[in-house]
Image (cartoon, rainbow over all chains, first blue to last red):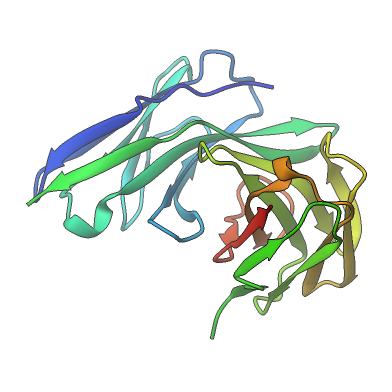
Length: 112
Length: 114
């Protein structure tokens, strides 16, 4: 299975942009890149996903390297509510069935 | 209304016991999952069902048996519980089993085996 590598933790000041990196050098051509976040004592929640092109939604942006071996989740203005563990995930297929391969996650701390 | 619900939220039991965790989704989704999050917060897929059919069965001990009575429910039964089974178990659902479909996670069940 392809794997993802993320920094263990990052800090950001409130109201500033945050760039969360993820390396996935063994990604295959059919693997999608997903980001989920997990607030304390809650289940993971969807943030964004993409395959090859950069993606934007109301929560964040996803920048995918041209060779797809890395990606960056961008939170445009961090708030205290964004403090969470952010998981970079590959959805990998075996015989047409996809499953999520979770990374170890980056714990984001937002400073007031 | 809770989209994906799990019961119980906490489960404390002794080694050797048998226990079940229930999951229900009211989103009308076709696919449901069980994940295990260990003490180091590492999340790993255990099982997935699509329209009541098992489609993912990771290398999980056969003491773990999922059951999907209908599309809205996916239960997890664990026989002969061991200390290493202590973890948080998350149920999730998605519209379909393909990658573009967002997965919705339940609040988790914290299982402690003593």
